[in-house]
Length: 480
Image (cartoon, rainbow, N blue to C red; front, side, top):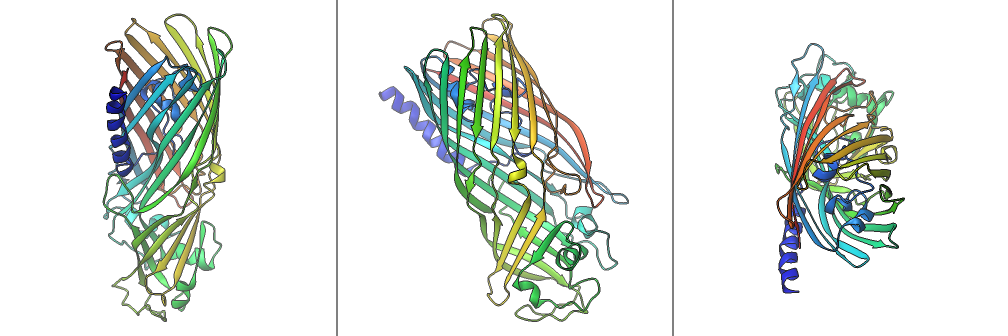
């Protein structure tokens, strides 16, 4: 008992620390990682029907019942290297400086008799970019539906950062030698930073025009006149960011859950299935947010917002909310096949219900001064559901050394028209390699490397994003 308590103490400390150091994770399957844990990631992300360690809490919790009797502790670190460039005709390319991010993960699992249980902490996913203040992404041509003559550059950096993590409590039960069921209760946390330019023509269209890309409303608009034909605002800039590489300024917490099952058809073939619920997150909120506005000289400014020369900018401070930001439900099925004592083949299919949670991006800003009022913006997203096919194999070169390889093939859920260069979650296919080495009967090391070839997508405003990635995961496992 003393030994077990000594082991569990550092695990708990690591979990608590990781909740405060949840890193940003960049998009692969939409906003999801392409795989969880280097064993699965080395095999294309396939993980539904074989023992892949504590990462089962993110994949299929029922596979925890396939582990041998005893305890297992996994500690991992991942590196994601997105390579993102925004392009527009007549403009120098804008390269995102967000190109290397590191994330911890861990899990402890115990199997005793027919029961398996434990604790895990994993990064779920996210997305983001960061463009320099001198790039065209800080000018209004990039988001303006055709640049009016009075638009130019704000000379302000533009960036986005979304991260979602989970603390998971899993339980699995061996109903009989062939059937195992399992589930998790997930505590979910999410955070977001944003520095986003909106041009006058974009705002004019969202207020008075065709509303092709979104809508803007709220009592704050009544303080702005409409005498200028180009609209009351030259540009606006939404800013909430905390300068941290690990957390975003706007935060929310909530819950979710998973259930799964594994069935051994025979000694060679195993089938698996899992369902991950949609999250129940609160609105992401941040105090101390700022909206910068530049008002056209022909407009009358009323209320508590003072008139400004067009060369100057007003700063309105207040509270920001990202309303109803959720992670989608997911359904996965898969199989593993022991072709020989040395070769295992795995195949999974996963359906991700992005359409239900990424229809709109809803921002609500309430000024600290009640007389200034509120501004509500809705940016259309209209993501499609995603189908992900994962195929992988593992081969034991020796009793200690295993090599792995796989493919992860998916459709891009982001429609061309609404692809935002700040949120280019457009990757589709991944090629994966991995290896594992048993250092001793108790210790092992696993590694995976993922390459996502470059994809390009052009949105309805003529901005093209080129996106590729190189990702890696390294894990140490200890059994006792």
